[in-house]
Image (tube, rainbow, N blue to C red; front, side, top):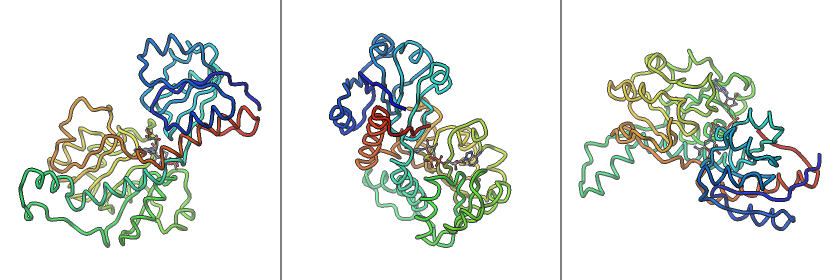
Length: 314
Ligand code: NAD
Ligand code: MLT
């Protein structure tokens, strides 16, 4: 398939490499990251390609207004900010760059697990307040503990192999990945009902879909070990935030590492401010390396399409 692309709009902070690659392949590019919703609706008909990260909400209204739109590229993994059904209805291709930020998201997940187990956030805050409080921050070792991984795809796998280096036993659930497959990277596949009571730590690495929304809720927290620690570096909403707060208050959950939230930025900071929570503002993919990779990947995928080379996407 060969696609003619005249003008591409980049409406989010995507690394300059993206602009360079498109330009050097003869594609005209405008980068404007300050557009309001109404400004985007006004100018989108001029473009046949759109590249976003996560700030731009590519709604049905935007897609319908994009009369010449042929392709939407997401410099990242999740395409939840793009109405893919509206795109399909309008014959617009949606591409993402799965894999470009896998290592960064996996490293960030490991960082949250480690930070949680040694109270890093709270201890650092306390020192910044001029205190020297060693008693308040007794930690626990990761060695010999069990990490439950829900979602054994790209990131889940990288988290498993990294945390094994700390001596953690890794178990996991994924409806698609076969037990033999994850046994190859020393992770024991099991049902969720078997996983809940065995895991000392649980990390989720699934998309947010109806089957994963509130996967951790009052009922499933109750099935977990008392003092389980949880991490969400995937999508806000996989863990029910109200249930998490209740589990933290009751001690059923001993700590949570959160990079993503049901609402971003959150309107209610109660969970973020909880002393047993380590929180980051959706930084999983925020590394120089990942942002360079996803920018290059999405630009190259556009160029390949123009040159009739390949189709790759969500
Ligand atoms: P992936 O597609 O490689 O893996 C996701 C896995 O989830 C798949 O293997 C799938 O079978 C599994 N899954 C689907 N439904 C499930 C269910 N009900 N129970 C258990 N597993 C289920 O995706 P990935 O690249 O590993 O990304 C995982 C998540 O991380 C996505 O939500 C992605 O958007 C998010 N992400 C976040 C950041 C960040 O900045 N925090 C960065 C990159 C990716
Ligand atoms: C993704 O889905 O790629 C991540 O959430 C990171 C990002 O939004 O850049």
